[in-house]
Image (cartoon, rainbow, N blue to C red; front, side):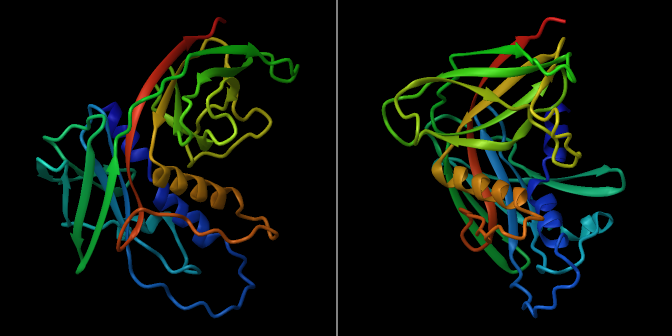
Length: 292
């Protein structure tokens, strides 16, 4: 149930569409042609877990996006298959009813993610075909995590999380991280991906922001901090460069909304014939209990 709750909350692409395509100023009168219809894929497989895919449709750039109409963006009755080169499974569509929204998720029961394996995704829906490939890379875990007590008198009960990582000598490590507190679900940070371009082959210490639900508003005065008494777990996932590039460009685009001086940035994708991401995760975990 906890895994399903996490999946239901992770409409990253659909919420991104809402933010990116409905936050434009109303007085812009540029005649922008409607984009071609494309399938939008948000699919993942991680070690020890079944693959799952959230399949939606794209939206015109200046179209009105209302979350009450979210049902119409889900694509139903698609043929979704995942193969590891030996075994192939057809994913089963399961629909969750939450707050009046019919949420469609495709699950690949019978195929578990394994480190070192490559997984191909094939989808046929609404007369369209999309394909993608991802590999689950070996995990390079954090050495340790700890907290320091925040010295800001406005937040006496807050703490900041720090980590230490020993990066391998080989350049080209990419990571996405999530955190959870107590029994909450894992949430990604505001900027959730890292590479090792500047720290290749070194052992280094760094602060790590608390993850957050992208549907929630952010208090930037205390953003990234944890509380005394929290049980903090970090989920540290090694990923491929294409997976890294997707989140890097998507999160930059989301962070640039409302900035008139920001340059448009293409959101990278590894989906052939569509949009979105098909990504493998190789997670490791670290937990710390913060004293009261």
